[in-house]
Amino acid sequence: MRLADATPLSQHGNDESTLQMRESTETQRLTLRRATEADLECYCERIYADADVMRMLPGGQPIPLEQARARARANLIEHWETQAFGPWLVVTKQSGRTIGHCGLRYWPQSADVEVLFALEPRAWGRGYATEAASHAVAVGFEDLSLERLIAGAHAANARSIAVLSKLGMRRWEERDFHGFHVTMFELSRTQWQAREHGPSGTKPH
Image (cartoon, rainbow, N blue to C red; front, side, top):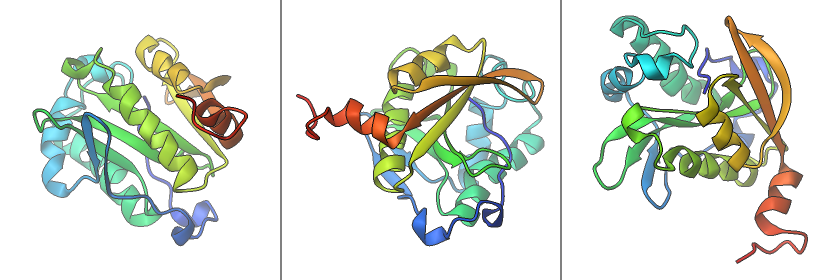
């Protein structure tokens, strides 16, 4: 899942008070929390230094630590500072290990908010991405009162595409992004509410 450069709040026309996300939250198996400077090196080693992860992210290959730290700082720390929301670190409750990121952020040079995630390979196949991303979608619609969320995945990234489909997101269009062929997805608040609560407005059992 894509993680690109932050866009200043002034370009989106949103008042910061209307888009303010909780800095720490939990799911059944995960703690999702805002990153600090002290988290960056560990995060970079598990995401930006891993060839399997980076194959599906901008650049397509591992990047040097200092470059990775700058990229992670812009996306995991500075986006929060300028927008009052952003991607969280994903930490497993059982082990306390940081396994990647998940959350919400602006698509570059756009007013659209995307849901995004990337986890280290040892965390793949356990449902963590779906668990974290489902929570991020709920926060987007319930806490931030967004009307629509988008997502973009490398067209060859079957794992991410499967997660987005599980979230109820629908294929929207194909784009070129940083040299990648990206499949775009979207989900409206109305579609999410119908999926979560059904026509009667009550969550199905």
